[in-house]
Length: 452
Ligand SMILES: [Fe+2]
Image (cartoon, rainbow, N blue to C red; front, side):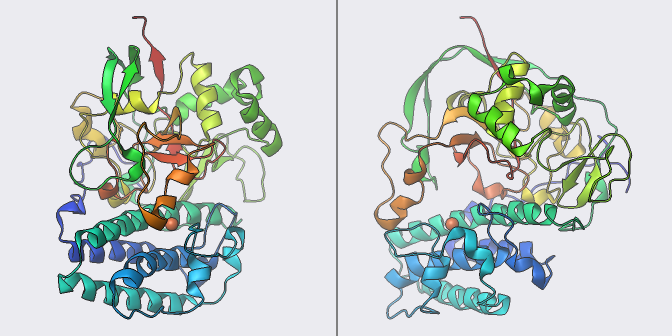
């Protein structure tokens, strides 16, 4: 591998697919899912490493079930289900649709076979394309199809994060794909952190524009913000190493009580997927000093300048406290990033890992005022609990179960990651996970108060 450098050309990102006609967009999103499966061997499709993660085969079928259930059964005259039991197997959590197979047991489903799931996808795709080509669908159907495509894009990210966790559990450490030279760790210098000050005041957040947004992003509403400052970039692995070297994982005064309980119970001493190469281990540790990272391209050296990721909320919060800072609220993040273009290291770059700000991919972006890395690279934990906005109304019918019923005991993350499709993210996009979750590409950006 040859190290990348700041001289690398900034490779262009695919333009968002929103301008496509519905039939074209449907085909493009479904093809993107297929492409994610291309590097896989047959044995990989059924892997489920933990209850939170699902097998690729299940993702492929569940996203298809979504279109069959919410579009074809309603708007395709005389539609018969592809298989009478697939509704039970591939319903995720829609209680109003019917019963469902237990989530932790999705990895037990050796049948249907992978080939049958591909046939299921082809069958539903053909029916969907015929419906889209007919030109007879009412606007409501097109809106539900767009929800289905956004849903499929969410599962595209989960395919990658779930596979990564599954491969991590294998002592052979399989690589999802081979390393790519231009994304290899570099020895470039750190990019200094700057503080971007914001005056606060009465502001508006939430979505009210044209185009798609999830129900949880609406309605746009006013919030009052005290003056604050937001870091110009994401926290790096090097900075997180300083926290670890300062006994960060062993100092209860830095942690929320629930977080320190998890640290002790799980034995956490580093972010997920960090490998202590100084210790002999079951994975063939080579005795070299320092930390290595397990990535979708296998294990490799850690670059101190790359953004730290695979952190839980608890770790992000503890790090911020150690730095005498805090996490931004989601309203602060949205205000500070409102003028940033939706551009960055998304899944289309092919890096499949956060890139240092000094990487050529970010060269154009750093010529502009920050915040940098606002979109792509790593989801950013915020201090905001996932709760309904004032005036929130869930989608009508069963799709009302999509977001609203999860608005408890989770934290909001913003900005997308290196596994997120570029056309999926908005400034107002609200991702959410429980505070102990760390198998997503989740990192952090610091914030602090300004005296008014
Ligand atoms: Fe889903």
